[in-house]
Amino acid sequence: MHHDHPSDAPAVLAPRPRPELMELPEYRAGRPAPVVRGLAPLKLSSNESTHDLDEATRSELLAGFEFNRYPDPLTTELRASISERTGVPVDRIVTESGSLGALRLLLDVIVPRVGERADVVYPWRSFEAYPILTEVAGARGVAVPLGPAGANDLEAMAAAITDRTAAVLICTPNNPTGPVVTSAAFDRFMRSVPSDVLVVVDEAYSEFVDDPGALDGLSAFRAYPNVAVMRTFSKAYGLAGLRVGYAVVAPVIAAAMWRVRPTFAVTALAEHAAVRALDDRAGLAARVAEVRAGRRAVLEALRAAGESPADSQSNFVWFEPEDPGGFEERASAAAISVRRLGSGIRITIGDAAATERVLDVISRERAAMR
Ligand SMILES: Cc1ncc(COP(=O)(O)O)c(C=O)c1O
Image (cartoon, rainbow, N blue to C red; front, side):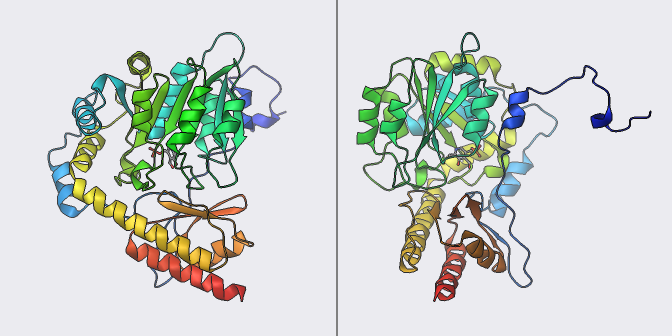
């Protein structure tokens, strides 16, 4: 008998991936914007910035770029620049390919590989990569439902900690819902967290926060030796395509991360663009102000349409319409892709023009309900 498909083959020994990985939910990226004649496509499904680099910056970055050379493995210039802006010493800053890369690296060095399988506690619904990175690191995921307002439920997360817990992931503002953890709630939480459990504060969207009571990850890092912070250039800095982010961790953890970090994880182009982005404070302030204004307008419009959106402090809004499929379709008809997750819709807030188009879809939604 002739076998030309592997599944027809008799049982022979062959390399196999770890079976538990095949049980994982697949990471689905946000869809591109649909093509609609006469309308510019608008992708609002992945919480990226709608602002791209201007032509001058673009040519400047490329002009001096050596495509033939490996990058600086330590990203010395970028870490110095982050250190200058944040006051965090450079020996506590580890850059990676996006904050996704940094989080993966961090879990790899924190989750013990001997003895019983360790736990990683994370909020749910939250960033879709958490269950995947947890499993890849060899830990068991403990998903703790969000509180009623859509923020991480720190009391329930504290209660989920056992002597098997290696790390707790906190997402503030939480993706996809948007609310923050307050510093008061975080301080209460930390009182019940054992000092050998790492608390990872994922601040991918921190630049968009304007609530004075919100937790500031770097203050928490200074106050507690077992806190780590994850940050990214993908969102407010508008460099999602270049893949650069970083972890702020205790020096002993940073040293372990540098030992296993893929040597050239951050390209020189990404490093230079990130340094420039940090220097352009006015640009950041303008983008953030535009997103905050858009967020207010979209939240208001959703409330006026009878929806109950979560109180977002981020560059997206989340609501659970009666007919999420219908909303997604109406957005598609306007050449806009949004993100549908379970019973909810997440819309990224972009520049003023993007907001105008979103408001238009919401007002049509209102009409459709009448
Ligand atoms: C909460 C959160 N953390 C981390 C990331 C990863 O971003 P990046 O790897 O681009 O830095 C995202 C991206 O959507 C996110 O929502």
